[in-house]
Image (cartoon, rainbow, N blue to C red; front, side, top):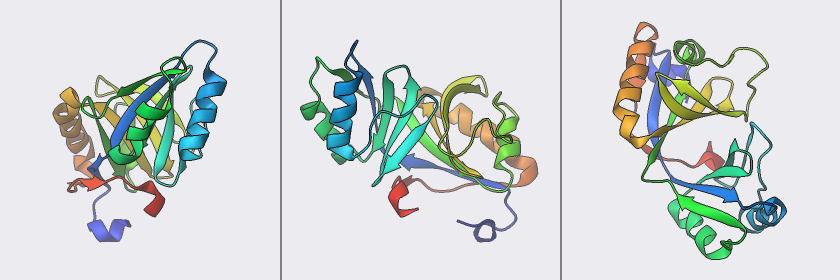
Length: 187
């Protein structure tokens, strides 16, 4: 969406309804997990600090041998059936976390009010992923585009986090949009 669709707003955000599954490879099983993810989604384990997407499924780096898979709940059910417990621990995190989309011409200025990462420079380009603190809340930050981010926030802190975004974005004009189903393949 362009800024003109949102009047003079400098930033807008919304909840993205999606499934979230954390997968952690067992010791020495990264190659087997990588192969399983390729079979399921055509995606492998992301590189450190990165994310990749294909056909509406995202694989976001969370730490060594740990990946967050973001997709519709229907697409994620196969992970529980098709990845052996000897290869990886597969944990549904959909109820424990909320994914937000935040974008607009002032998004960097809004996020910079509490994010310690350099979002302006080349240190955090498109498809970068990082665990970081924002508004004193541990989040997973994913850069989708030049002025678009997706943020995974613990569900217990979502009200505080969205209140922070509204407050931080007030000087630029901040709009809260209704929730939508996440489907990056259609963006």
